[in-house]
Amino acid sequence: MPQLLTVRVNRPHRRPIRVWVPILPIVLVFSPILILAALVAAVTCLVYRVSAARALDTSWRIVSALPGTRLDLEQGRTAVLVAIR
Image (tube, one colour):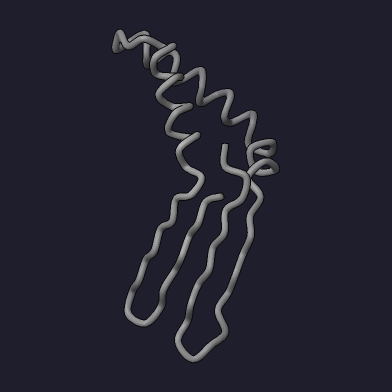
């Protein structure tokens, strides 16, 4: 499971902005919403006749694969780097 989200914004003629965001406190704060989303996902699986266990397994594999992901965005002279650790 990802532990840390790092965001760096490079701005022209200014110092870069770096922000470190720990994932666990965010998950704990939004856990009531996550429980509601899990219930909605379970009902959706029943409606579309998809195995809930397989959907859960696939979701967990995607979340487990996130550490090491880097996302680089550039717009003009501004660049944003998002790294998941």
